[in-house]
Image 1: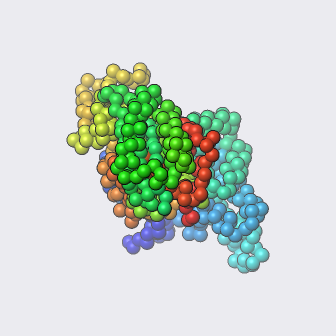
Image 2: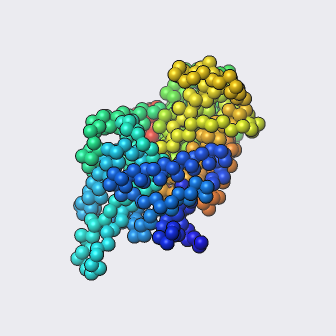
Image 3: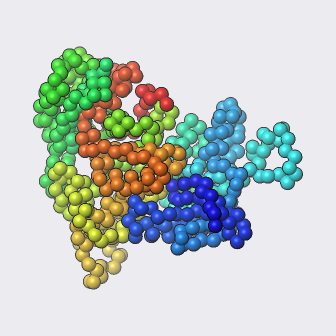
Length: 239
Length: 347
């Protein structure tokens, strides 16, 4: 089987391949030689299992995530659905910022953020903790219209015609504790602040929609989130 | 032509460095070493610094073969750090600035580490892993700030190592981390320890409690846990040190790799006191090779806190036209890396 390497992410290498005739993405968590072999195999197994479980749980709850076609713990490979036209939310945001003026950017991003917020809210309502929410782990997948006559005018509308897909569930787990949800939000906020420092409103937009979707524990989770945030700031910095 | 003198005293080291146009002229340092099983306390550390600092100022000028009039700027560590030791450096810096009639600049300690590391290794725009007794951060430069992508959500990695060294009563000379590293070299058996990575952040406090219980079963705080099995072997110090290093360094390398993938960078620079650990450097090098990246690391002269890095970062700020009013020459215990406007970099 010939494999085309697409990318080397932090977790492993991504190839394009096929599984039982269906073209798919193969994610290989290769052995990290820097880690002690025992620790490495433990982490790899744990994360592969987490990824399979969480993707399934998300799909069952109506949240978009790649379908896992097959997992092979011996060769550390996951075979999953491939979104050829998708780009990461990080790329999408950066392109939007480059293409539009500040007002239009805000408008386009507001739409994206509310979609992301809704997704994360639903995830937490179903007690799925992603564990690594960054804009690199969220895909924006344009919807391909059935009638292929896309005109120039349709271009702007198509900006909002997309699916938001969550990927990379390696660090995910299943927990209903507000603490875990709070930390999940904190990780996202930090990632946004460092990656998209000029668009400070992004997290606000996401959080607003998150609150509408995160289920009955909304107040508790947000209180916990504030607590986790304060923990981060209070940490003294000596050295 | 900028000639800068830097004073560093944010933790248990007091150091003076002199740099002239990127050339190292002097780098002197003294470390406050406590008995095994004890850490350094602010008051005693400040006393140590007070007694050493003037001798060091003289020594540095002598080593550099300079007169005070040859200097352009006096720099000191403004923070973050322990207040009493920081104050010793700040007071001497203010006095020297007035005495010699030279401008005064307060430098962020973390920025000092980063700039010194870049200067010594020649790394252009690396992902920086800053690991020391008080800090654990993964940093990348973007748009005039050093942004923190990942950090510890509780204690710093060096703090974790130091406290473990205290538990097993290792010597603090030359540093607890160095002695753990030497013991770890004799470790054979890998003991499973908690491995906590949350996105690009890490946590060490749970791991420390866990290994504390392994090292001293009498310390077992969690009463609900079953008492240790009779047959369970007692772990040797060597194996504990080995496993501790393997686990925490794997966590650090992993978050660095995450930041590299997220920022699409292939250079890594390790700075800070823990950065001179050879096992950490080795693991990072292997990770870099796996993704065609490049590792930059320095030795103990520049990794461990020193006055030179303050002088160098101060000189960069001075060249970029940064000025500090005398009334702002205070110290602060909390001073985040991303608070500093990096006006000396144009990329």
